[in-house]
Image (tube, rainbow, N blue to C red; front, side):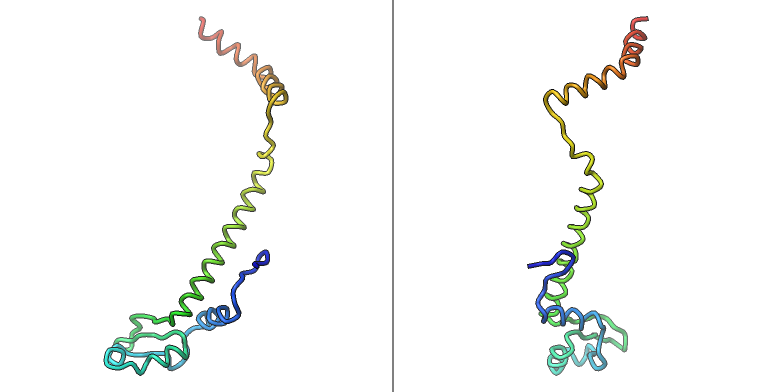
Length: 131
């Protein structure tokens, strides 16, 4: 169950997200040539969770371990849900005074009071059209 203001995720998923957020480890790089010719980079990806793919020493891509990708995805989704809840709470708090709906005799009385308070303006409107 998710506590208010806390993201509910397993310990393993949070560790993967934290490791991903901390950046690339030394040795977690593979050049395009090595990547296309062998699979020796796969154990390194499993160990480091992320790898830079280099072409002439320029980063052209980033590979992410599938489980890490899913952990980051779940983390972002949980953050979005939390943000949405906070936005809804703020919206309802800002509109709290608008939730006092009236009906029946109370609504009729308020409408009559409103019309009577604007009677002079209404009379002027109709009198002006008759001239």
